Length: 466
Image (cartoon, rainbow, N blue to C red; front, side, top):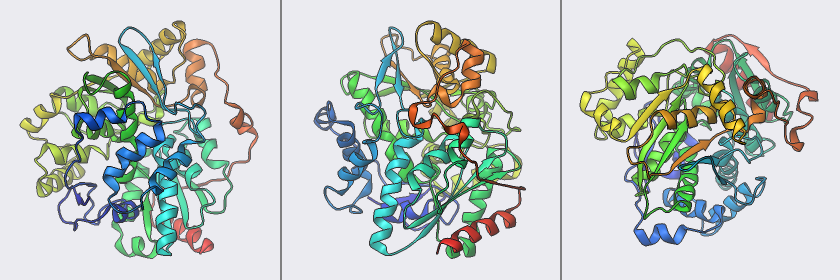
């Protein structure tokens, strides 16, 4: 298995190289040269497997010879052993055709744990074999940071620095990051929004001398390994509802496009997915694209679903590359135009190809509150992001009324207690292992939106630990 850059100028490379590189040196994102596809018999053989075994099978189709036989399976079993339910990602029926795919039973209560608990182990294994040390830098709108820190804390071969937008995460999200006092962890709060943080991370990767000096790597979903590790839960849930003999649809609350792209990747492997529904919030760039081919960036507006407060969806570049016939030069030119003008000129034919599969709905805060209340009254507690997913599935369902809709329940309601209490009158409690979160000491640094200042902070942290 080899990987190519969406911008066409980076040399193809192995999974191991892609894992460590994160972002391609031409600024693009990595994708497999070809998509592995499964036969009917292979899909059927996966049905009923324990989740770690299914995950190892699916992810192993992307890792090539990076891991010796049995190593990836052992890592998957270890990564998911700490989840609070043996099912790892249980399905809960919401109504006659909707099911919540609960992705919040990991250590930080969000779907990011599925990929990052595994990535931390992958990094350690590969780096120990190579005798190397890396510095991971990442940007978060709330959940990636805590999941990455939990996965990477105290690991011998790496340091991690996470940027979050000051005042734009929930208190629980922030404290999950800033109360981890491991020596290899540093948190930085940036004046700005998530797009600001994401731009700074990309700028560090594009600063070739700094990238080489720090041996930078990434845990954001710009890292292909993140996407690969999210594909299995789409496979597991579809098989549980009758695939491959039956089509399913997914409704995914997403801002950065990584989670729904993992579902797209599962479909590219042959999983029978009829429709992918995007649940957006007031930061509606993805909904505007699907609805009217309007990929125009606007200022980020705070919402009740802060993990989706994003206007520049990094992973959309992967879909764009596919829509443009895997033409790296066209993809690079389109992304340059987006950066220069704030508007992405997607050809009409490519847009129409996207709308054949994708639907989208921008869910207002008022709709989010109403949906959380409706679900609560029916006996289901949902966080605001999950509510955006269920609301979008009602607004833009698949054409065939017999197709089951699997809604990605991406976060535990206790991560957003203020929003849940506003909607339902009930304040969700943190699980026992986080019960004292508000009593723990926070440690983070507030910095301006300045690349030199942030590079200096990263350098100081990494050098201290060398």
